[in-house]
Image (tube, rainbow, N blue to C red):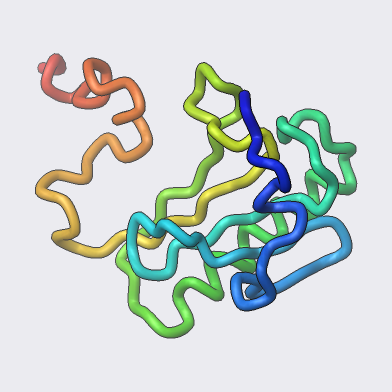
Length: 131
């Protein structure tokens, strides 16, 4: 995985920082999927969430909750997609762990069922084979 040098998450622009904690930062996504899209990034440069120690992992997850609150402050989202791409095979393109907190709005896509399952499109609409 080719992480740009310098890493965009190690020293983000101040205007992108929505909140910081001891081990993590909440950033405004520069390429948002929807209004209010936030990123939660550990301060330590590691590629995988599973490389973080338990205190760092707990703080990152607490910041995911904070990012949801921040994303909803000025908007009224109807739901959220929350997740991370951990490893190149999972679609990770920047080698610094980061969680996405993506507000969803009624009608933003034709059929939102399946949500994150659409990372493998042929398996997303599992309900079509039921019944």
